[in-house]
Image 1 (tube, rainbow, N blue to C red):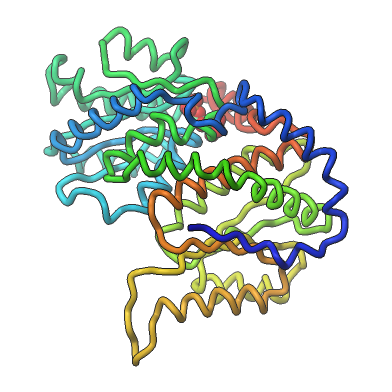
Image 2: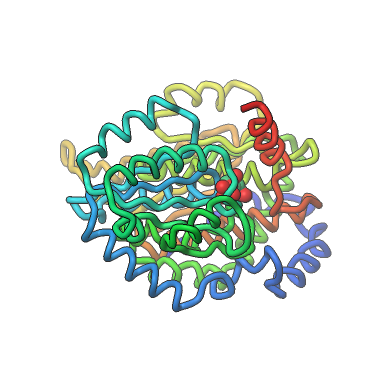
Length: 390
Ligand code: PA5
């Protein structure tokens, strides 16, 4: 179960001024058309595809030491986040390694060295099939795989997740008859619960059926998404330019990275938008805490807290309780507004629900700003620049 605590904001003047906008956005989202269709996951992925993902994930778990996932941005961040949350579920004899999210040659060289004598299965993920980081990394990895395996074996060990129509990756997959998964026609960062994220998650031991169930349940709480989006918008207009996504559980470090990607890429447009940062407490109270309390008054925080955790008793005290007390007191004493999201425990259903909450709130927030939540001209400009200069 997840509880959203917006109470510090309920007396903010002006919330009703948003009624007309909200009505319009609701009418639009109800249609679940075009890129908005991510809000109804059943329009983005079929039961048949889910069955195939589960079947292939079993094959992967039984036939490799390392599952190498190549992706960047929306084809990487969310998947890495969820796999990291449930790290304890991964079978002991298999590792999932992500790469392709940079041009860091040291990192790739180390990975290739590390997997040299291991059984490997590769999943390359790119919606466009043309992203440079991915294509370079995949070329090298393919060379490595070709040295190691026969063509027949490669057809079981190379899995390509991309769109149905175009791109270099699609051509390679077709030409060599590699196994393929489809990315539907929705924005990259909103495709997390398609084969993009579901295959790595299933391999990692995440119960993807429960995760999807949690996501569908999120729709019952869509009002919360509207409240969150409106509060963020009002805070921004009140000079709170930076949102500190704040966690007290280290497993959420990559979840925060995903939130940064989702919100920055969706809403950082037309010289406006909240800048997202990641805070892990109480570690960061000993660094950023100084700025939060005495620096510029430009922050608000969105706290994600897991109430029940594996506990450690220290001097008759529960460390988990101490962490919860710290969270509440820091939120109270901060000189910044805090939105608190409490989940009773970390499980697939809650996380599915939370993914819905953040994705839908983020898109609504984009509509409130009057921008297109699903494009990323700034990222495309970087891609153009790097393509031209290499
Ligand atoms: O959300 C997005 O659209 C981006 O973050 C993309 O996912 C990212 O740039 C990678 O693109 P692609 O999946 O086409 O390789």
